[in-house]
Amino acid sequence: MPIDFPTFKKSGLLAELTRVFTAEAEAKGLLLDIDYPPGLVPAFQNSAQFWTDVCQKVANGLTAGGLDALIAAAAQRYPGNPVFNARQAAVAQPYQPVPSPDTRPIYNINIFLSYSRQDEDILTRLLAQLKLLERSGGVTLWHDRAMTPGDPFDQAISNAMNNADVIVLLISPDFIASDYCYEKELKQAIERHEAQTARVVPVIARPTADWRKAWFGKLLALPRDGKPITTWPSIDEALVDVAEGIGRAVEFVRRQRG
Image 1 (cartoon, rainbow, N blue to C red):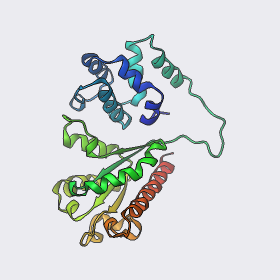
Image 2: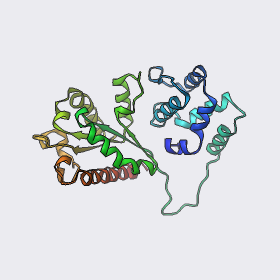
Image 3: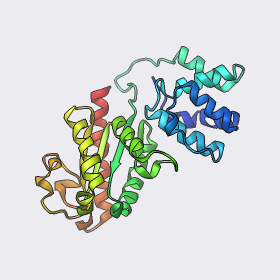
Image 4: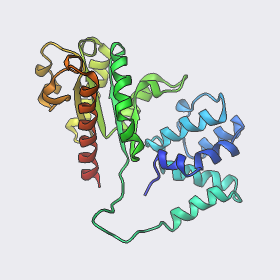
């Protein structure tokens, strides 16, 4: 089973990459070994940030073979490295627990959040409510603030949407008014939904005229009954309802993919 980014980080593999590949030329050379797209290589300000950015993107499906292919390439350059070799051995002979009704592989779910800049405060609070879902493992959250300076904006967003299993649309008047949100991101979300390759979840952030007549109006929206987040007596309660609904969507997709 491919290793996801939280597990990769927890296992010490990220720290070992950061420790071993500290020189920019060597680090970027390793990326060439795994056919990492040159246009998406982040700026090298320091080893830790560089490898965090790279590994998150690789975990999201940017390159074939995922993070294990990256470690395999690193092991070829440093064949005596015990950390890289241990992962190679684990992949060659994976641990297989005794099957039980509660034991099943965890399929990593990528969540893309589409929003208008005017709703960034709501996005920030929603991300905080989703943090426990992310910490539980097997879930990666992505929004444009996760990009690295120098990334090609349109391509990075398009790639992230193509890799998403769940696409969250933060609906507001400003989302509707934004040509980029409505004409580009929504269009791509519709294509993924109609191809049944992603699940689109509309979240009504603020009161929005006639939103039920839009394409996403036919989908079950969050919060409960499509009541806009800002109209709830407690915004925190509204965001809890949204986060729990997104969690249910994640489990639905995971059952389908698993």
